[in-house]
Length: 114
Length: 112
Image (cartoon, rainbow over all chains, first blue to last red; front, side, top):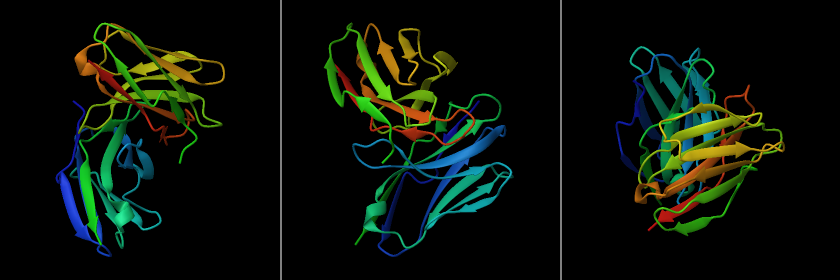
């Protein structure tokens, strides 16, 4: 069945460090992956996405890596700032017409210390 | 912030009651998806609406139902509320052909 899981439920870093959040997925038919950031009391905020025909995508201070061989996804945040403190979720969507059905992992709590 | 809005922000209901939650999608988006997020968990897909019809459903019982209106706004209705329905209910909008879903702030439902 489908499942998306995270290796590290919590991550604590110092301001200025680089952060890496990992995610494992099991559905080889998934063709699209997204990282969301959720701050307390708010809805998930889109960070970056990647399609299954890519293995790397870069945004502003963030990079997503996709390793389809081992079904692994990671989010790298450069020069982490206190404002990056939040829960980070990876989500996958199965290929085909299920555009809306995102399957989310449990989340990783990132804490950035000044 | 996204252009997705939800109302109300918070709601307290009693077991057995019915509730209606509302969502306005971002401009240019014609698809609305609803998710339930229990405390400490990731969001769980409830269903999606496109062109006023249900376009996919997750593992939720029929007492969870929805509507989409011609202006693409949407409602989530839950009948016969149970204690386990207490959660944050999230609405996300998208263009069907696009992959990105943008979430609203959610409605916190507490069932006592």
